[in-house]
Structures are given as structure tokens and as C-alpha cells.
Image (cartoon, rainbow, N blue to C red; front, side):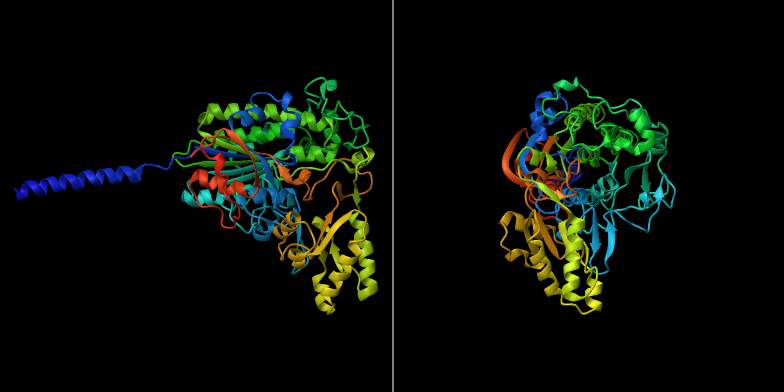
Length: 551
């Protein structure tokens, strides 16, 4: 009897052990691949401004089968590319992640720093001395959601970043990426931060000379130009011209213009989007992304830089911008069909958002009898320095007004024992009288300033005391830094045209629907962490958008 009971007990223990082993060996349910798509300078309203002319396979597919967060805002200033990419992927703001602008000034030394600058590395795929290759994510102080995926998978997940702009590929890919690629003089390049030499598939891709082949096709409108009803007349004074153009209007003979402008011209055409997605597909194919033999999730971070170049050149209301989005819609449809075929429909997750929006050209707004104008940063800085010299006896006390911030010459102030508080007070007093300025505040006093709460919070979030200026300038709506009657557009403000961005989700783990609840750019990383069942980035201040997740 005792022996029988022992046998039964051993069987039970064995069965429990098998069941426990089965439970622990069952993987967490995750998508095979996550694709993050940043559309540089995409205003939220572009989703609907051109909606009737979009195909069923691009933006409409995401809107009609995915989930749209209709009121997603950037929660800091300034609204620029490097900060936008960093904030989406870290779930944080410049105050924490440290990317205080495309360029910023190290306040302790006065050193001007490009966001992805890394003089310790050399370029791969170009001359080693070329500064275009001396790039890495080292200036980013917080982890990214892509870093956290690497950590969660014990570095088995594959992470790659791709963008024409170096910062658009590098910052989203994070510190632990397998690779980041950016475009220079006709070729896709990288740096020794990631690798010793380009993978053979990238070298072979470059040999196709696709940039030149696309530019040889010229750029004309996708449809008859008289059907572009969402744009003003093509030949207008608000658009900038490429070198060699007689007027900024279609047809744009890129086949001839590239001789004077170089192959970098493709960045300012819709072909730049096509080329970027060509490389994205090649990366998925050759790196076998979404087919990880370890069964873990891979992550491809793609940033489409061309919409930003096109917007800066031709302005918001141009036929060129409208044509870009109609063509991008087709490129996205083609890319989604590729993902369906290679990864499997419903097996991957895609999100699409933007790093910032764009303002109407101020002169256009003025001509329509609206308020607007140009803040001439150079003239204001000169006048401010002249005033401060009279008061304090020293030249060039203000180093820069970059990022709409007053950057003081801190070394000079310390060496000459100048009264910093008095300098800031004089600067604020002067700037409040400058045409087009709405608010001015010392950064350290922003919390108590008489500024609307929403703007105040964005100033605080954007302030990194090691890398930001001492004073924040907030311009009136539809004003931005530039010379009078400057063509094209710009961005950087708190206003909705710069801060209201699209956020659409589609695929594995995503519900169908929409929310009009206010969400923030910094919520994206936390939502991805929830989707993937991993830790959020270490500087994250966002919250998961639970309505999105199908769980």
C-alpha cells in the first residue's frame, strides 16, 4: 500500500513538473515586428485635408482599420526634429532626455553641439574625415523603447533605424541598436558606433544608384495640376526655388537640377520617401526582421524626412506639399502590402506619427489679412547685446537666440563677475518690447510666470538647464524666426499648427477605433511598452493610451 502511494505521488509530481515546464516555456504573445513611422513635419490636419484623394491602402487603411488618437500634442517647446524623435521613443522631454534642440549649447562651456554629434566615431560608407559620419546617440541621456526591447529580450531582438536625416535614424534606434543608416551624397551610411563596415546588402543597395534614377524621372504632379483644390496657385511668391529654377512651379526638372544641387536634392522631393522605404524593405529582407529565429520581436524605426524638406521649401499651402502626401500615401500602401506578404497581415504592429507640424508662411497669412510676422533673431540679438554692453560694459553677453532661447555667455559672466540676475532682468525687459513677442520668462522663474498654464508647462518640459538657454521667448501665433517675406515655412512654436500631430496605430494588438481624448507625444513609448509587455524607458513621463490596446 505504501509503495502504491509513493508511485501515485511520484506520478503526480512528474505531471505537475511537466505542466509547470509547459507554462514557463510558453512565450509571451507579441508581434513579430514593430514598425515606427515618423513623418517629418506632418501636421495632424493632413490626414483629412487630402483624405478624399488618398487610396484605400495607405493613410485610409490605418484610419479605417486601425486606431487614431485624434488629439495628440507635443508637450514641450521648441518643436523641432531631434526633440520630436527623441521624445516619441523615450516617452520623455528635453528636461530629462537632454536633446534640447537640433543644435544646443552646453551651458557650462559654451560649446555648440549638434544633437547626434560624436567626434569619437568615424563614418562608415564615406571618407572617415567627413563629419556627416561622425554621429551616434551618445547625447541622448535617457533610454528609448527600442533600448528597452533590447534589454527585455537579452539583446536578441533586432533594432534598426533608417532616415535620410541622421538624427531621424539614430535617435529612435537608441543606444543598443544593431544599426542606424542615414543618407549622404547619394549613399546610405552609418558610423563606427554601430559597425566596422557596411553590411554587403547596404553596399549593394548603394550600387543601384537609386537616388539618381529617381531624380532622372523629374517631378511632376501625380494627377492633373488643375485637380489640386487644396492648394493655392502653383506659381506664387511664398515658395522657395531650387538652384537653377526660374520659378518655383511644376514641372520640376530634377534630372537637370541635380547637376547643380547634387543627389541630396532627392531629400526635397517625394522620391526621398520612396527611397527610404526601399531601404526599409531591403533591411527587413536581408536582416530577416520579423522572422527572428529566437522568436522575439524586432523593431524597425523609419523616419520620412522629405516632407520636412518639401515643407520648408514650398510652404504649407503649396501644390508640392499636396502632391507629396498623395505620393506618400501610395508609398505607404505599397509598404504595407510588402509587410503583409513578408511578415503576415496581423503579425506586425505599425504606428505613424510626426516630430512636429508647420506654420503657414507668415507673409501668406498677412496677405489674407491675418496676424503674422517674422522675428529677426540676428537683429534682435545684436540690439540686445548693444543694450547689455551699455549696462554692463562687455561685448557679446548673449551668445545666441537659438531655439527661441537667450543663451548667455556664462564664462564671460563668471570671469568678469557680472551680475547674472541683473543681466537676465534687463534682457527680459527689452524682449517684452520687441514686435511679435507674446511672452518672455526666465527659465528658473517659468513656474510663477504670468503665462497660460499649457504654454508654461511646455516651457518647463523643454528646459534642460545644462543645455538650454536662460530665457524663453514665446512669439505671437503665426510668427517665427526669419527675415521679412522669407519663403517656405518653419516650426518650433507651442501653437497647434506645430504641436498637434497625427498618431495612428494598426496591426497586431491594436483595436479599431479612435479617441478624441487629449493624448501626448510622450504617451507613445508607454503604449508600446504595454503592447510588448516590457519596461517603459527609464526617463518616461508618459502614460499608456489604453484605448489603443486590444487587451
